[in-house]
Image 1 (tube, helix red, strand yellow):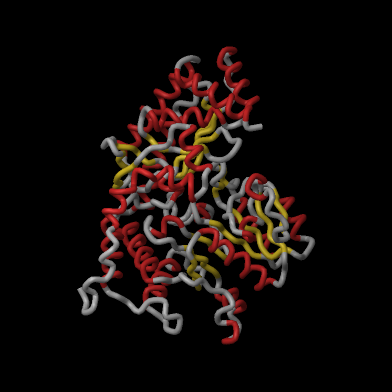
Image 2 (cartoon, rainbow, N blue to C red; image 1 turned 180 degrees about the vertical axis):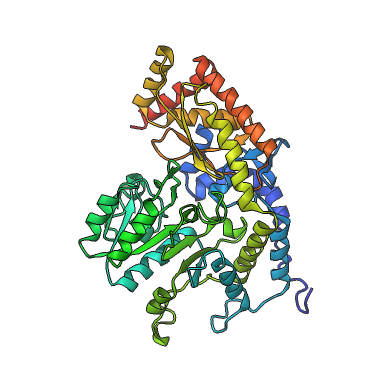
Length: 468
């Protein structure tokens, strides 16, 4: 305890506060935050109370173990509460650094930038913000300023964030509706080189922003598309922006997903999520030297783009610890190996279950797609669900995985019959066994054509019809 610290904050006890009011969590959200969240969770039976977590698992109030196949939408790349990241945060807090003075150059941002850039040797500089959407906003601003052009191209079904700029390149109408006008933009189909070239010929395109594997639906860019798109863009003096917010940092079995295709060297790369270690929000935009030097062209423009909490010591320490763990524990290779195992085990079930249409993805980013069955009885039930709302069958699978098997997953997007698996990169073979066994049981029940699963399906149909 430092001099003068005695008595500070004596009136605040976090443990006591949680003990006294933790049980009010759902009521507090309903009263003061997004009131639809607790309503939705209760509707599908996801209104659980989780007490603690470690690695790829967390435990509820009754002490039951749950397998995490969602990783906080990809944030928990190392799993929950990795001891190396925890220690780094304790260390940086105990160091009592003179942080965020704004008029000095602390070492941690430079060290994290240097380390990040070592994984992308064709890039030169980094801007640190606080989230994935900020990383995308930075890339959009830098691309427009560097090229002097207003328009950005993006893909159908893309997700790049929800702030105004990144929303402009969001390929899902449900997120965009009611928030216009947005930035000038044009969408193309993922893999459509002819459409890309047609837009580039208009001469006003600053950049094309793309996820190497789309989070919505787990759809990968076709082989050769990124390389060909890069060549087209550079020929027309436009930039390639790779959004690696979810796919980056080992998720797909390469450090960045664009590295799966030889010769692809984006002009700007956006990362976030797993770089945080699951603790301190951080986003990063990596780019070429000439782009940064054009944006920050003089001392008068030194603060032309900045973030109040960007480069804070806690976030930088977390990021450095994450990259150290990834190297020490070989997590990129592990994601590739475990992902191949899981995807292979699941793909082997496609011929066994007629409701199972396809298993796709790369590394530990896997999509399980369901489709119209062939047998008459199942087909009539499938048609009933589709008539009410597309995506209900996938929800019917997600719910028993959690309620009966204590495995957390998600439907990959609105109106999609796809479940997305993005577990922590520390997932092991026993976790794969557990998931595959549980998934088999759920599929067996679904194909039986009766029971609690289809009763729940009828409940979802009634709710979907009532919501119209």
